Amino acid sequence: MSKGSVNRPIDVLVPNDDGVRALAASPDLLAIRYDARQDPTAEQQRAAVMVTGVSEVEPEVAFMRALPQLRLLQTLNAGFDQWVERLPAGVALSNARGAHGRSTAEWAVAALLADYRELTRFATAQGQRRWDHHTTASLVGKRVAILGAGDIATHIRQMLAPLGCRTMLVGRRRRDDVVTMDDFRSVAAEQDVVILVVPRRPAGWSTPPS
Image (tube, rainbow, N blue to C red; front, side, top):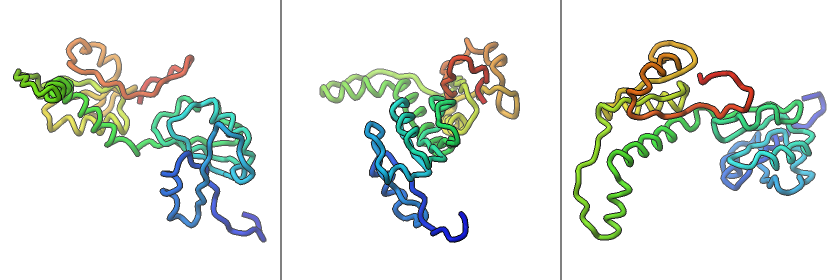
């Protein structure tokens, strides 16, 4: 900031009221609601940071092009492939890697338990006031391959361990507790479950998962 300039909060565009509440306690940030389907106001055009959630890319990119002061796009999710090579010049991209590892892992484990223990079937029977007594499968001893070796994959492995699963993390480089895709291919048919936790690669990308 140059001499004589006035210190003021950084204008941050947020997509909903949750964002406004989240930044309300910070004196250095001023949260401003935006709707990418509408033209930006003069106030919004002063923003240096824009936060985006799960939304359509095209309207967001068009909206950003009308923000002359924009310097950073912050996503609320770990995935960022849809934004690569789409942002205006001079705009950096930051994702939310590490923010959703535990919650996403909980969902993955819950989905596996629901499937093996047939919870949907039992819930349907309960709703029909019907007794549906039968034996279900268990996760104990199941072989689970997780394609990807990042934050989410690591959390999934940690949560599956106490359930007795035999897990395998698959990444692009062999390292402690991580095997390569070549290693996985040789034992793929032996796996009971395969969980895909890798970026969605645009056409032409050749970089394998972490």
